[in-house]
Length: 381
Image 1 (cartoon, rainbow, N blue to C red):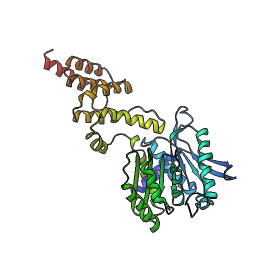
Image 2: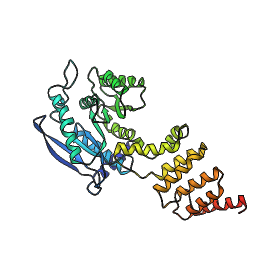
Image 3: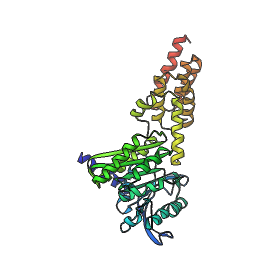
Image 4: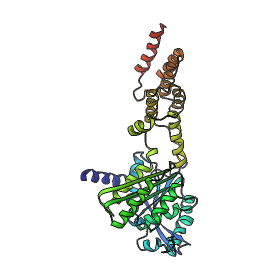
């Protein structure tokens, strides 16, 4: 286990070596001082002039920026999440004042209020204007700052859709406030983590919040919780960051065997619509229009065949021809559709058209020719 963790961290540092951080001093009117920022832009950011990227704000940037930026670069390199812009806010000397809240209403006060306005009214607008950011914006914090990021959640129209709360030192009413807010919110991704060796009060409050969230029935909220064995208040950070990215960007990754078994096979609505909606949703969230993966076409078509939803193969075939016009995949689906709906001549023509295109996955020219010859044999043509 230790060797695999060491290897993963080595890979992260090697991969992230190609994405250099930009160090910038940002003058804040709200704070009446300058704040040091660390900014990591995606690879080939300058070349991909039409591409937009999710924005990830990292508080406690002094020590939290590098592990977040490294994981983001590593995951995006392997296409397990979209490339993203990562911005760390250094708080080494100011974090307690930045996260200050009053002891009556337990809301940001004094320097805490100013820091809240700095993030929402100055920093985020500046980053959106300066860089090509997508609609999805995520904020990350640890203990004090993990409590603080929740104040953005309480706004009527939160500027952040994703919250990564690593061992938050929650203010007294936060358990109730967060669960109540999430129960009536939509399109929010919320990751929460503690550990067996975390501080006792933090661990209790975090577990209480998780228990509260188990009572919430809201399909528009994506809530994830980890309680790491044998980790401390500090070491859980190294485990929580990749877990948070994995869970938040699950929809971005290829359809897995688990999703196939637990979602696609028992799906009562259209399997074809599931595929289309999945890519539409990721485009809206991440601002990235992606070519539909061959793997995802195959997973969906296999579920369609298993459930004998033959009518869905026609739109699937047309979509595959549009997405991958040089490959035989689309004509194979159209051929299957015509075969199963009693139109053998059209099926044979579709397989013949596919025979002329590039092989893909299990589909070969010999396989397509066999399909044509089998139809001819069955009907004596």
